[in-house]
Image (tube, rainbow, N blue to C red; front, side):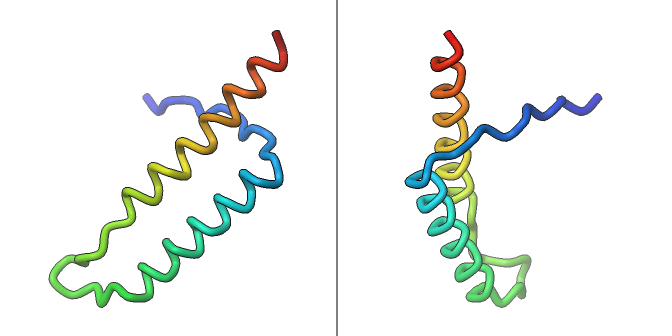
Length: 66
């Protein structure tokens, strides 16, 4: 069974800017990948950074509720 996704937290302006920069870097890497031989460019490090930013925002919102 699929894990239910939590609603996206509200991001601060700084968090939005950091996520936007990381998404732009992911797009740039995607364009650089020639997709031959199964694709050689990995984006998992950037995705992990985005996930950490979103998780931090989620924790901040939870702390504000208490």
